[in-house]
Length: 435
Image (cartoon, rainbow, N blue to C red; front, side, top):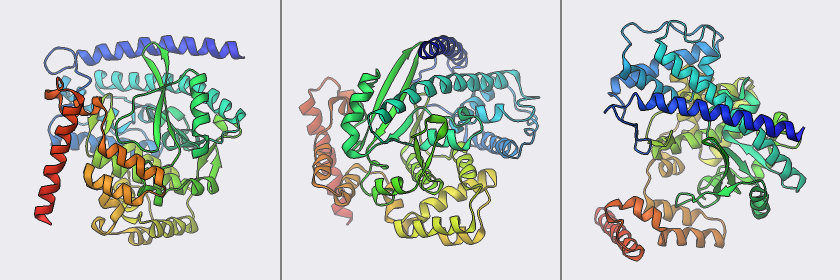
């Protein structure tokens, strides 16, 4: 059985490498300037009007797909390479290619270039899912054998609990939560399984990323957490104890694998959505700011599908106690606009809250490194956490400084650090002037 798993992994690795190389070649041919696409720069998107039209159409497609209906007719007048490129980008942004490919009469009447791009994206996602599941289940088995209780969170938990086809829930990694006292043992198991620690972005307190390279341009990423949320203020909403008390099994990934309850996943998803909308996230190596991803709305539809009146009431009471009302209201309201998510009107009324009246939502929506550090420091529950926050606020690694000041990359590290202090000083002075 083990040998068969290795052979399956090898075949999938070859297939996904061929698929990805073909896809990148097609993307190269669609670049604006006729040259290769720069995959390290932020994506240059068309005008807002065309993006809004594309998003509205894709939202309609998602609605029809969730209702087991054929996708809407292709709009008249939508054609050309630039339109095809924009639509492919928006599909990738929303993470819906596999979802749409499973719909009745998928892509019938669509332009060949758009249909082919989405079908290829769906094939790539299915291949990734197959190899990722093999790698993930092997790791989870090793953790269980070592007595480490790992909770699968976010996209992977959703994929294997609420989606008929796990590849429908597009994601780039798996988030695993372990107890703080198990973090070091988990690191040893990850290393033994062939994973290597990534040089994480500066500013992460309670998580780190481990990469398993399978060759053929295929990596699998594990985001290891020892708190459900990385920021101390958000840990007042989501706690390790809460996740342990309110869990559900994920049998497709192993007999001992657990995930948070539907309510906790909804709140967690809403917090992540607010964070990513305000502070950005990466799609194909490009940072995207603003906007709601349609796959998030699909998540909420699946999570709330079987909610009883008591479940809705429990959600509201939880949000009232943890200062999460406006965050969850924003997420559910967006899903109502996007895909017509059904939420009882009385529940939305109870959740409704001005964002300005929620300290947690204000913190998420207004990123500022100085304010973030101050808030994190005050909210930190332990002395070691406070020391870690102070150290990160005081010292940045060289790669972070070079990224912040690329035109000064020839400077020594201490000079770049002084440049950063000077900038922080000016901002503090301006803040004092306006206070």
